[in-house]
Length: 274
Image (cartoon, rainbow, N blue to C red; front, side):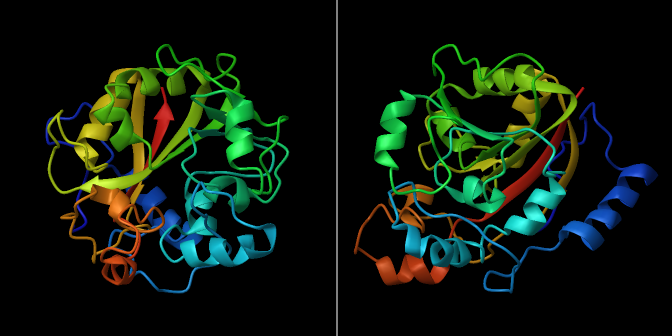
């Protein structure tokens, strides 16, 4: 997908201002933000994540490094304004990418739409998740924590599923509620090239659709980046985004092809709670 603004022409937001342009330039210098799609395979500092299945601890660093080709940990976290003193909430993690990227940050917490004990049992070999930092929430009536208690909320690979399951509006409202005023929401997710129908199950979603639901909840788009883009993603697979790594839902069927493509083309959007 060519780099373009995820904001519609009539949006109530205006990020095309001298101040925003200056911040985007600063982002390029400090966090690896760019308006040109990133090239998968380019060197990336630090780490990224593994599939939600348990991975032996000895291989976690290798798995994180392999994923960092597509999810650029250091640059992405800097772009979202994550620092050690900020309380970070990992919403409905699909993988250990964020908990590993933060490397044991005491201010990290995750929320999952199931019993926390079941989630921990399914991920018992993942370093970083524990009963102390994982809690559950109801997917029907989501409350992610105490109101205005979190500095940064990050959602990775969730919005396509929320859209499919008709949960997206409620989840954006819940993320808005848990953030402090002026707090940051980071959305990183498989990107469609055009708006998706409500019946779509591919896991992809258009940036403009994400912006719509975020604005509806009270967020304002601050910046966007192409750092986690993948030009090789053609989006025409039998299992949608899940056909590609790290999920590889089709198993060995066309595995070599999907591994050569790599992880999905992802949007990277930064919102601020108004």
